[in-house]
Length: 185
Image (cartoon, rainbow, N blue to C red; front, side, top):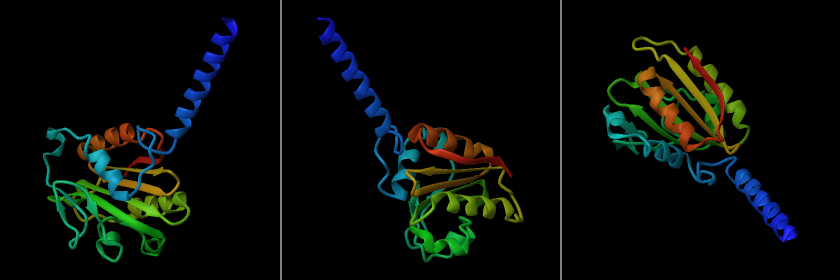
C-alpha cells in the first residue's frame, strides 16, 4: 500500500510540474498566443463594461475597428507616428495590433507586436522611443512593456486611469509575461 501511495504522489508531483511549465509562456490556460491581435482581444475580453467607457479604436485606417482592438498594417505610417514603433524596427515585425483611445490618443495607446528576432531588443527600442517622445498636449503618465513567448512584445502608454486597467487585465491574462518596463514618464 505504501508503494502505491508513493507512486501516486510521485506521479501527481510530476504532472503538477509539467502543468507549470506548459503555462510559462502563454496565457492563463497555458496556451501561447497565435497572433498579436489575439493578445489584445484576450485582455480586452477581461474588461468590464465600465472600463470600456471611452472611445476604443483598434487597427489602422484600412483595418479600423470601433469598440475593440484591430490589426495594424505594417505599411501604415501610424505604426511609427501613433504607436511610436521606431522606424528602423518596422522591418523586424511579422504583425501588429493596436487599441487606442479614439478621443485623445495619448490617454491610451496599446500595441502588440510579433517580432522576427530579439524581442527584448525591440522592447528596449520601444521604451526609448516612448520615453524620448515630445508631447504637445496630454502627455502620457505611464508605460508598460512586456514580452510574451519570446516573440511577442506588448507596449502600453497613457494616463494611469487607462493604463491601470490594462496592466491589471494583462497580468491576469498573461501571468508569465516578463514585464521589462513599468515606469512613469
